[in-house]
Length: 427
Image (cartoon, rainbow, N blue to C red; front, side, top):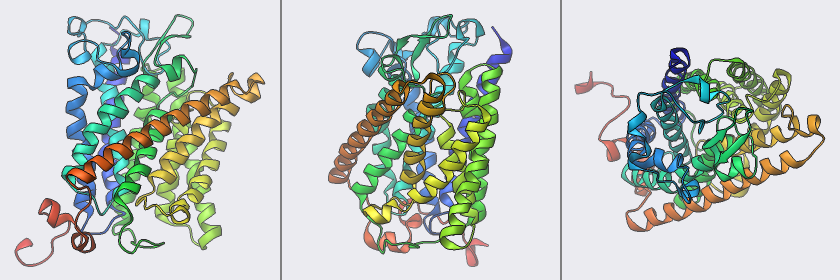
C-alpha cells in the first residue's frame, strides 16, 4: 500500500467535504437575515442524507461495471467488495487515475473521496430555490434526485478503467464511448447541478417581488468566508481527482489557483463597466465561476490557457447571471449563471485548448464535438429528471412555503430558530 497516495486521497476527501459547509456560508450570506438558517440547512441536510445513501447504494450505482450496471449500476451488496477492504486496489475504475493499478491505495479511500462529490453536487442545487423551499420537501427531492440522476451520471462520467498506456478501456458511456474529457466533474457535478437548479427554479416559481435587487446580501463577510472555504476545499476537489500526489495533481493544483484568480478579475471588470463599482460579492462569485470552469480542464490545460479560461469564464458568468431577468426564471443565487454556464464553458474549452486533444493541438474538431454532446446529454437528463421529481414533490407534499412565511422569512417557521437573536431572553 502506498501510504503517501492514500493519505493524499483521504486529505483531499476531507477538503471536499469542507466545501459543503463553505457553500452553506457562501449561500447563507446572500439571503435574507430571517432565511439564513433555512438556506444553510439545505446544504447540511444534503450532507446527512447523501452521505447515508452513498454507503447504502450510491456507490454501487455509480461504480458498477456489470452488464446493464454500466448504465444504472447496482453491483453487489452495498457495491463495495468487503473481501478487499484492506487490500491494495487492483483496478483503475477511478476518476482521472493514470497510475491506479500501481498506486496501491485502498478501495475505501476512493469510495470516501467520491462520496463527498455526491454530497456537494446535491447541495449546489439548493441555491436556486433560496428563501422559499420547505426543508422536508427538499430532503425528499435531494434523495430521489441523487438516486435517479446523480448516481447514474457519476457512472457515465467517473467510472472508467485505464490500461497501462493510460487509455480508457471500459466504463460509463460518456467517457468510454464518447471519449469526453472531464477530469473532476464539469459535467457530472456542475452542469448536472446547474440544470437541476434551473428545473427547480421553474417548479417553485418566482419569489414575491422578483426583480433586480429584490434582496441584498444580508451578511457579506459570511459569503466571503464561504467563498474562501470553497476555494480551499477545491484544491482537494481538483488536484485530489488524480488520486496520486504527482505531476498531474500539481498542474491541477496550479490551475485551481490561477484560473479562479483570473475569473475574479474578469467578473470585476464586467461589474465596473456595467455598474461603476467592483463589489466583494462579485469578487467571490467570480472566483467560484473560475473554479467551476477549470474543474473539467485542470489537468489538461497549460497555465496560460488556464488563465485565459478563468478570465473569460468570470466575464461570461457575470453576464450570464442576468439571464434570469431576461428569461423570467428566479434562480435565487445564480446556480444557473455560475454552475451551468461555467460548467458548459469549461467543458467546451477543452475541445479547443486541451493539450494534445483540442483543435489547436490536434487540428481535429472531434473532441469539441464529443465535449458538446456529453455536456448536452447531462444537461437534458438532469433538467428533465429534476423537473419531473420537483413537480411530483410539489403536487404531493408541496415544495414551497406559504406566501406570508416567505415574505416574513422562513427560519422560525421551518426550523424554529433564528440566525441572529438580540436582546431580552436571548442575551
